[in-house]
Image (cartoon, rainbow, N blue to C red; front, side, top):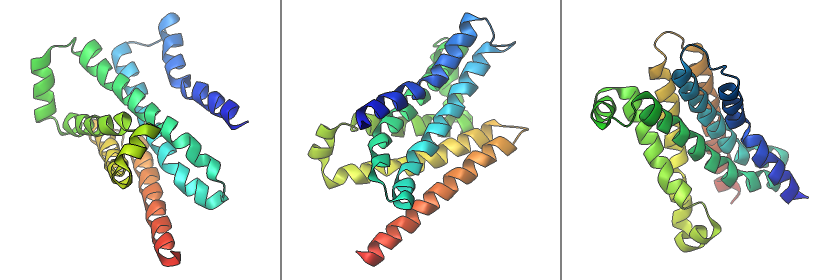
Length: 194
């Protein structure tokens, strides 16, 4: 039963990609299509970060362990949408013109922190398999705690990017702070009862 549910969740996770494909097909991306694509995938990256971080608290709150079965898949979708977000910027916006891209990374703090978040996602995606969990053992957990830094970097990227409208980025930041606080509470409780 769980494998069918996982397949359903997988196809549901492709929904953000489907939205953009549909918009492209119907020529419905608006006056700034590249910006719309980039913002769309950037926001969905943050959504998937929030979803990934919510799995452990949901397990604790509901006392159901099946939430953890979706964490790896959701984490890989974080990397997937973050990569599309980055490729839109590098390929569609700058057309792989590396000099201005490097200048942006070095001079604009929101691009620097966004790029740093993506770099930190690479080892997480590369070590997401069961085989890597066995090879890395207890180091695997330590490595995958990078998701906390990535979540903070992602929310800062969105805040610094938004020059005029701060409400939406602050909502994501508040959600991430609550989810990280819940994880700290869970860990403290585990230590106390351990």
